[in-house]
Image (cartoon, rainbow, N blue to C red; front, top):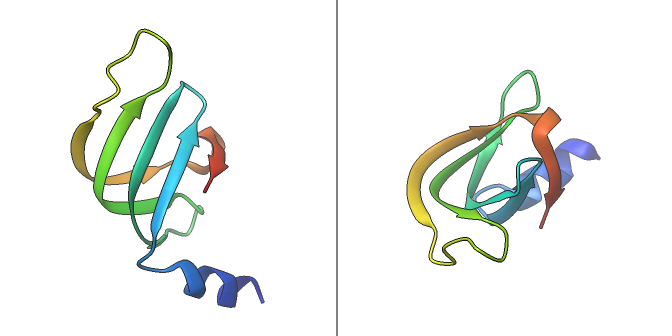
Length: 72
């Protein structure tokens, strides 16, 4: 069942929030053996009142599972 859930969001857009108040919005392409999430065509946003809301393009990223605080 867990594999089916992953397959259902494959190639979908995810917003991943990490521990250091950043968010990554990109296309989910899978995980590695350590369950890190892999995204392509990704934009990075710094969260906070004094940060630039526009973000920046970072391309392909691997987000370590231990830093993930939320996935939408």
